[in-house]
Length: 420
Ligand SMILES: Nc1ncnc2c1ncn2[C@@H]1O[C@H](COP(=O)(O)OP(=O)(O)OP(=O)(O)O)[C@@H](O)[C@H]1O
Ligand SMILES: [Mg+2]
Image 1 (tube, helix red, strand yellow):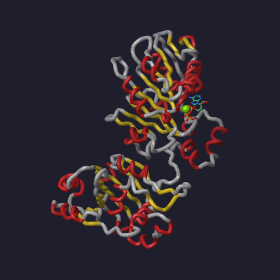
Image 2 (tube, rainbow, N blue to C red):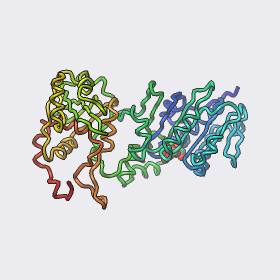
Image 3 (cartoon, rainbow, N blue to C red):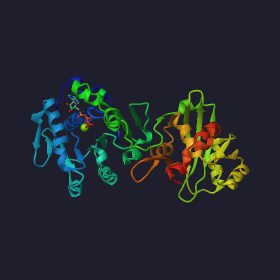
Image 4 (cartoon, rainbow, N blue to C red):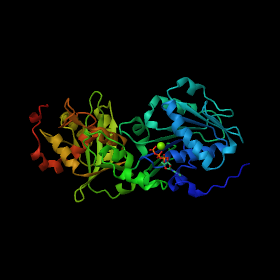
């Protein structure tokens, strides 16, 4: 048995705590540039392989692997001074641990055949690390995930590292339901998933020049994504004034609870928003939601009753008959007033608030992530929202209708902008 003595100082603390021994099936390490993600993973790969794990390191394109992960891992091997325990095959891109025959294999996701046939000398692949995972397709990653079946004494793990380039990315939709913006690390036993966000400040090995370059970034998008490690958005999103937090504790103290309900038809869902509005602090909490399509009115009533109790539910006024039926079913439902300009007035009102979305409200979050202004053919942003991704948002607007009231007077006339 090899006994290695490693000074903990060779690691950045945040990765020592959350990455080095993490045993979750799905692990995400994302954030700003130069935050030490890749380096820390390379360190873990080497230590794990010395213990007998087999790694597959993948990127979208094979030829970028040699320059990135392969080199990083080679650097980690020599930094740990364990070169003599490894045999490196540069042309095949394989690294074999001579103590136990465990291997590090590399593959580009563009090479489907290779990915399918790749197997280590002994045992099975226990770990897959996908570097720059935002370059990959959903189906490729699902395919790799399937490869992590088969018996082994090791817990199988799929690890993704990347910069959060665009929020409508599939990775965000697939994994970030558990994310909480007030935290740096979120861990879900239920989903066997952990997410760590890091930025340059988490990497104490950077030079002053590296730090200056990141801090002096002048492009707003690059600053958000690469300096602050936040999910990127392009131009015309309507709401940026929101964040996601676990609200289970706070809910108990909410005393200004309101409900809004938007009716679905055809493809659209019925959307219920449960909110608490703190007028003094101008804070809006969305702490519960229902998002369900294809329901008859009785079913809507049964579904929302446990959440709304006897409290008022302000509904979409396009279906007065439904409102009436809900009342007959014991829901304290009334129709919203809406009227011309109410959508824009509601948006303006909500833009002036601090909006906090509960981690248990994935559909609300999805809408806030996507709700956009229309753009004309030259890309000029028009003050008219695209009529999509707005069901919960409409419901919130109904719930807040009496607060929005006066803001309506300042609304633009849509016709001035040549759109209907
Ligand atoms: N534990 C460490 N020991 C020594 N140097 C380190 C360590 N961690 C990071 N570094 C240094 O910091 C640099 C940036 O780290 P790394 O490349 O891992 O960041 P990253 O988060 O992967 O960045 P990007 O998002 O740009 O890919 C590395 O090239 C290396 O020089
Ligand atoms: Mg990196």
